[in-house]
Length: 125
Image (cartoon, rainbow, N blue to C red; front, top):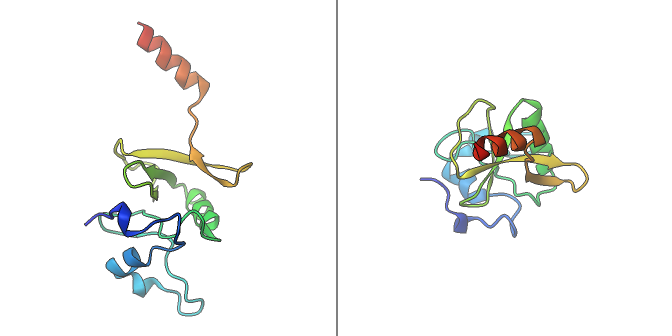
């Protein structure tokens, strides 16, 4: 069953223990550090970040995924952050994000001016 927003409030918690337990991710805990996975690796919530954006190492997880070529999205329905392979098709409920280095947080990805111009020209036709 996909996650419901009221099950975990990323504004108040820093790690989604409920989803961690629901998906049986205990097997992925590093025995030395005791750290669990940063995101759900499979199932209907595949790609869901378990760390909230206020977690101390959230940015490390984002940079790791981006470094492997993943794209980062926010689900507009539940407000949560997801990481997907670059060629994965995502629905309209997802908004692509990018890291804003000045603000040190994720923000909606800006479309290039060339794309906006082409869209406006096509719309005017």
